[in-house]
Image (cartoon, rainbow, N blue to C red; front, side, top):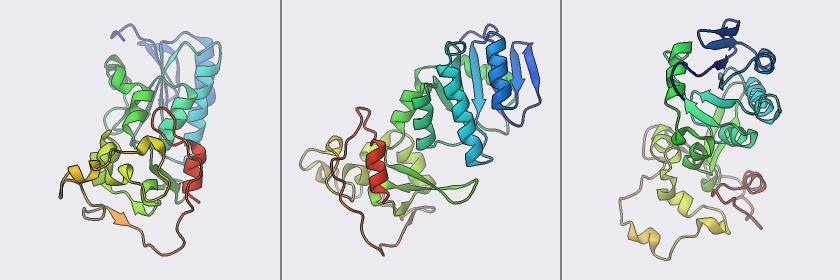
Length: 253
């Protein structure tokens, strides 16, 4: 997108209400105002900042993105969603909604309209929603622990491994999850077909090559008490390598 030519519609709940294209952008602060503006004027890019105020509010912004991509009057507008941290389930929902781009944002410095415009100039294939989703481990699981917070755990470790920053930053969020011992050999059976590895592949890595969960600060392993999870029967994976929702639901029982 060429600088100075893109008309931006910026949607974030904490923004002052500035409808109408001024200096190349409009600023609105609710999904309803965004819909009204998107259907009243012509825009090249709608930027939605998903603020971490509440899980309910996050759903409202996802529904807004879906509306913009499904409505015949707005579906030609490219949609960029900005989030503060990678979240597998959220990115899955955005992909299903048809969102074009997803990127991380630092709210302390990146929320001014001109900063968002500069970011839009740099959008490329690495920001496409499908590409971002492919970098996030399909076994990431997010469990609500209140109205504003969630616990991130590993389904491949029977949902008993609470993921700290080390694993998230070095494996789960960077596309390196295929090197993770739990991705390669999940602790439930039978393994999904797409996770099968060649015989001896695990041994070929050699000792000491893999990070052991629980050995780094912030990595916590839940206790083993309680019944094990039932084997997953008939589990299917999508072509992207992501477990389908039925399989994920069964793994969390």
